[in-house]
Image (cartoon, rainbow, N blue to C red; front, side, top):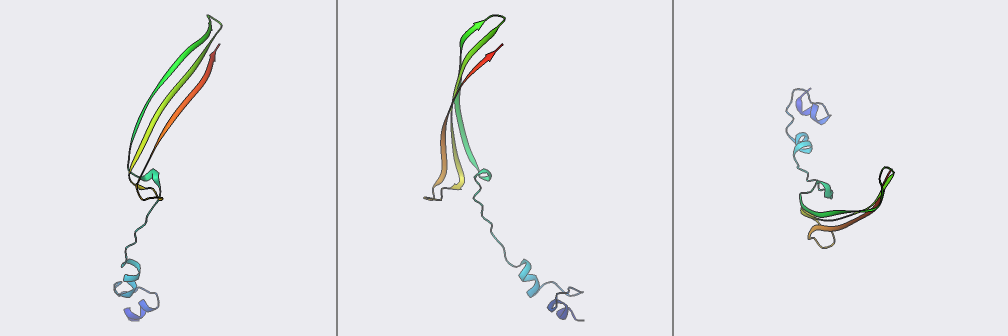
Length: 104
């Protein structure tokens, strides 16, 4: 069986894999695009602080505290665009936490 006959019927035999068969499998490049923000390059900045206030304390029995924190964070992406207008995507957030803790 000739190499040309083997290619025509799916065999590879001793013939070259170049030609129509090789071009269909390896002749074109494919570009895959992703909309995954987590894989993008970005810069971030965060600034925050915490406060604690002792509401009540009974030595040897219990201690009650009011705790609070604030954090500002900003993310600027270098290669992820906003689908709405095509600009580079960025966002900022303000996080406030308040909680009461008691130890006994």
